[in-house]
Amino acid sequence: MVSVMKQTQPLARAELAPALRSVTLLGATGSIGASTVDLLRQEPGRYRVEAVTAHRNAAALARLARELGARFAAIAEPQAYEELKAALSGSGIEIAAGADAVVEAALRPAEWVMAAITGAASLKPTLAAAERGATVALANKECLVCAGSLFMRRAAAAGAKILPVDSEHNAIFQALGAGRREDVRRIVLTASGGPFRTLTRDAMRKVTVEQALKHPTWSMGPKVTVDSATLMNKGLELIEAHHLFALEPAAIDVIVHPQSVIHGLVEFRDGSVVAQLGSPDMRTPISHCLAWPVRMGTPVPRLDLVRVASLTFEEPDPVRFPALTLARRALAAGGGAPTVLNAANEVAVREFIGRRLGFAGIPALVEATLDAAHKSGVTANPQSVDEALAIDQDSRRLAERLLPEIAAIPS
Ligand code: MG
Image (tube, rainbow, N blue to C red; front, side, top):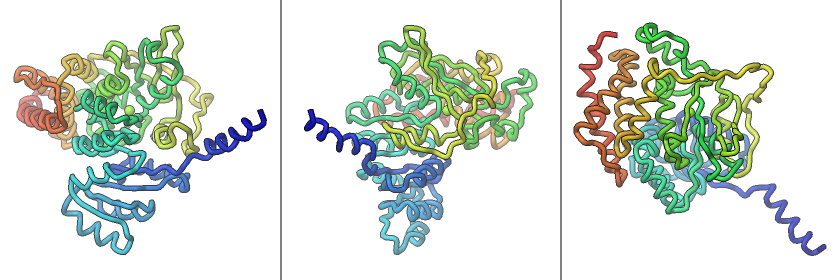
């Protein structure tokens, strides 16, 4: 008995002090990147940074690479190479530029990779990290929306662990830990309802870009903030959840919860509903992925339920927020339809922010593009990243062709 005790004690101590984790940040200079860096600063002795990448901000990337002691820094924009080189001269940090350099960063031997590149540019590097079996903290949506089956299949084959960063999916991931997968009856994603939750249909036709960019509970980039105002964000999250958790669309519900305190719920067959709650701060889900499977301290404001006082819930209104119905339609159609939905929405949001399309024009353009794509047969399930990218490009062109007609509809 005594000898057994002696053997188990050092093991228990080793578990209490987790080993150094090597990490790579793809998209280090964006909002998710900044929050991740903030968390790395909390426990500097626990993480070693292998690589950092950015789209075109060489000065910010160089600053981060130096601060974090990264071994490799890659900038996607080839023209930013000289600036990055000058900013990191004498640092001993290896540098490279171009789309291939970002993939190279993903391939370097870091156990854990934050995939926070936005847009279709995220597909190749994120897949590269997954295919070498890394633990991937997934913050971009394109991998799941545009190539979900392909991405999850290849990640599983490589033994990669996919950890969802998005607050709702992270909440579901945490709540799923309370039971067996075969005992899950359904999951529920919560939506804040955005800034126009209580507006009438008429009032919604006249909303401005400034109003759409004011999110009531979360502070995020402009694209996702507009997506929250249309509820397209929740539509895309529904598609992501389908792939991440291998659930039928009918087992994924959405409810509006304006306080953004409950981020997701899982209902088990015995009637138990397990939820994850927290202050609306992305550093909580990011930290959950960063320290996983253990937990780490964060500077996040603690949730004070007495101060929140009441949590309310509503059914999403399909008339004022058609985006959710469009997303369900795209998911049911399958194949390339979710990619068409995402690409058309990106074009629509860009045009709305540029004041060339009204707010109601966003779902209208998405619907028209889905209809046109359906007729022209853009429904094949992509079998490679290049095929997914081609569907994305075709859908953007289709949306741009339909744009003048949709923009001309009086609001
Ligand atoms: Mg979310």
